[in-house]
Length: 38
Image 1 (cartoon, rainbow, N blue to C red):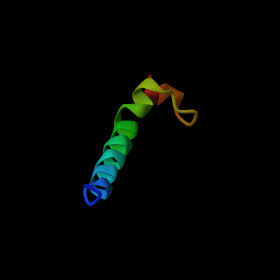
Image 2: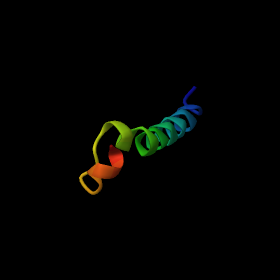
Image 3: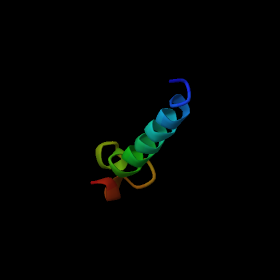
Image 4: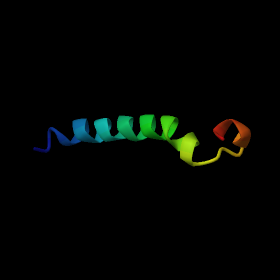
């Protein structure tokens, strides 16, 4: 079980990063480009 932990953590990190990159700016206004977010 401990051998799968690093893989699961890596997968979660990738999902979190991809989610923040796509859905992040859509829901959270970026200070750099608030007009683009809307």
